[in-house]
Image (cartoon, rainbow, N blue to C red; front, top):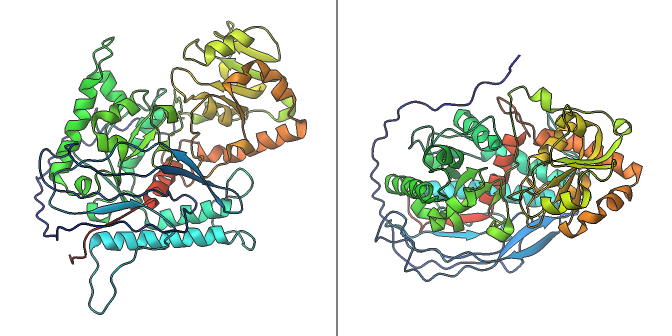
Length: 514
């Protein structure tokens, strides 16, 4: 029995009244304050000020001299210590239309946003939002500091624990803070199928399923944009490729123009894009052209959170602000067909891969291993009558090389079927790696080590393999697609990654009352 509803097809015709925003604010120069103690886990260390002023279209991108420091991909070990990895700076932001002066900066170690105190003082709506985020940051920092003397947080559904998490206790605290506080506003402009819709049964299913779930959500979605911490731009690059791209033209300019026009509309009708230059906005795309399409608006590319399957750092993916979206190839709503597999002792094949010869990595894999070893079964095409999923269920390790792009649906398929994923790619940021320790339940092999695959996998002891497989079964809940979504599943893990990026920035206006 099909337990999931069909893909969401949109609301029908929307009638949106034009909004006029005439805020009275003081125009002044705002200076950044950077904490000298260095970054905390999950919080990036770079900052910059963005004076917003009038002139030009809704998101003109020129004539502003501004500086942005080097970003940091901040991860943490189980003791809560942060480590920084430098990534290149993006292009300097530019002026947009809007009468307000706003500062947003990437967080340092401050626990909370300093707000004006005193009798009779009123907080602005934005200040109240930032105060709540500051309290959440403080709670998460406290969780990190409680490394040696802590008990599990109460939770009726699931308590994260074990080595598959970088810091299970801090992740759980962060997740609970998200549930308590986080609100998302979905812009209602745009009509399906290009907006508010997406593919739900294809290799781009992650895109459509998230759009569908976000549209239908009642817990995190708010209809009041003043209460929102982030703003979702609900366009589907996959649907744009289907409906407005001219086949074989290799011209994505119509897609980029559609996105630019859409951001023009929301920037003209609402104050939220202009007040942050898009830093508290996010787009989501699983199509290969998602990253390229985001270049339609430089501030979308440089400031906004881009939730992408193609999380390729060599092509501009910035782990300190962007989110790696797991690629899930859903062909049916009956998820049971894609789940489950035998124990470690009933998997006679050492390693398995079947897939097309494309991209820079797979030709090397096929050259080294195609039809050459019964232990490392590598095929360009499966033999007739052989089941792809059944062979994965019989395999200890499933090889997951990059294709044209770095992401591969085989990673999630392997997790579903109890096969330990073996990732073979360069420059790929694995999904949810801000909280998950992928080395605890998968194997990473460099492209240069493709000829040594059998030696590497044979070198893993049976005891360690059993640990990897059991941890893979534990992490499975974070990649499962549920309809409706359930706590800690893939929809909520994507939201949590966006939540972490929102915690990385602080925004405030000059002190005025509502």
